[in-house]
Length: 394
Image: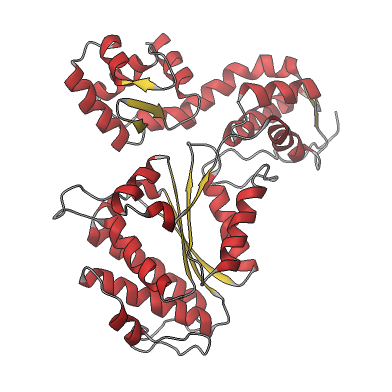
């Protein structure tokens, strides 16, 4: 063994960028192409995928790419509290203010909404836009004003435009009642209106698969507003790279058979690759070896799954009610995929009506997403295996 094998090169965590980003070249190319086509074409993208596939990391790389081509990124992670019109308006207002502060060399921007800088490359003024665009509410108009001012300042500072990058966007959805809360529409409407005036403004919404349905309900023509990017697990060759490349600058190496076993066992999911690698690295430290082998994996596997359950899965059901948790445990005994409500009614002791209510609540909680009427899927990969382990330990 070498004296110093270095720091652990694997980085499991929420939104933690790995040392080597594998298999995301295609969405990055499409993101770059989208910015090049703006503002004549709308720069909107919808990024969806299960938990642990690296959506947040990809969004952060998008921000870096935007900066490299002189677009100003504005990144924010949405929260469950942003479900009302007032909350989303306040959150976006704060994001835009932070963006303007970052753009300006001054400690503070004074009355920026009333003193927008003129940019020679911008062909319209706010007054002209407001006359040609009809907004549904004063909040939409106010938000449009802040968006316009932020873009105008970005142009004055030499940027090509502003791109909003909003993570966990599935948390924001419109209520069915036309008199209820419609935060998603409030977010989209002013951006689309300003884009129609060819303002260099873009929007990337990133979230669980339920985001696509939420957008469709908010805007029936959303498929024409957003380029869809579905982020999935890595192909076998990409998974091998994601596992082995971080070791290249260290004194350790991985047995080829071990790398293939890990890539197959985790089914190519990026977070799992990082977690398996991290645990194997620590196990190699304890064993005093410089090669990761199948034998080391066999000895470490119980610790890996213990950490996986504790760090990745347990928090996702900790806030659920006992009835919701019971239904999830019952779902592990049903055929899958997909998870059918009819099968759940047979597998659990609950009535069909109660099952449907609980399924709706599990969708709202982000544990499941609806594929079509009566059919569902888990939002976290290999979640069914976890439920079986949990059920066996009860």
